[in-house]
Image (tube, rainbow, N blue to C red):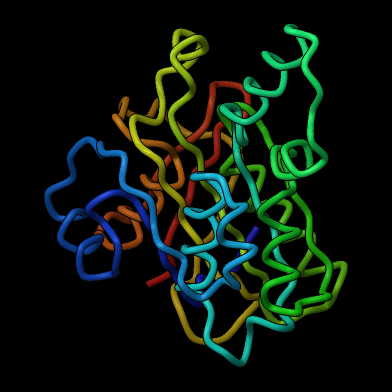
Length: 241
C-alpha cells in the first residue's frame, strides 16, 4: 500500500497545535492531563451535547482541514473504545431501572463524532467509523485507503482518537493515559509525505502512547521506518524520500 499524507493535525492536553507536537516529537514523553478543547467552531447546541472524546476527535478533524475540504472530503473516524464513559453511564441507569433519554444514547454510539462532523460542516460525503482493538490505527488507515479507491476521491480524512477508560474498566487496557486524537489527510498522490505500508516487520519497542501518536511522531522524525501493531497484525510504515 502506498499513499501520501497531505496534512496532519492532533490534539491532546498541552499539545494543541503543530508547534507543540513538533517539539514533543523531538523529546517525546507520556501524554497526561484532563483538558478538553473548546470546539468553538461547533454550533452551541451541538457543542453542549459533545462528550470529551467527541470534542477531541472533532477538534483534530477541524484543524486538519481547510475550508475548501471540510464540506466535501470523505472521512474515517476510528476509536478503540469509543465513548465508554457514556456507555457505562447508560448501563448503570439500565441496571437501576431508570429511564434513558434518546440524546444520551445517540451521543454514546461509536459513530457519534462522524455524525456530528457531518451535521456541523454540511458534509454529505461517505463516512465510516471503525474499531480494531490494539490495531485500530492500522485498521483506520486501511479503511481510509479503501474509501479513496471506492469513492475515487482525491483525499480522505482519517481521525483516530481515544480517552482513558473509566476506573471500573481501566484494568483492561494500558492506553491511553489522556484524551487524544490524530487526524491525517491522506491522498493517492500529490504534495506531502509519501508513505509505503507493508504487512509484517520486526518487534517494535514498547511506547507509552498509542499507535496513531507514535505514527505522528515518526512523521516528524528522520526515521526511515516504523512498525506498529500486534504480532499477527503488524504493519511497517516506510517513507519515500
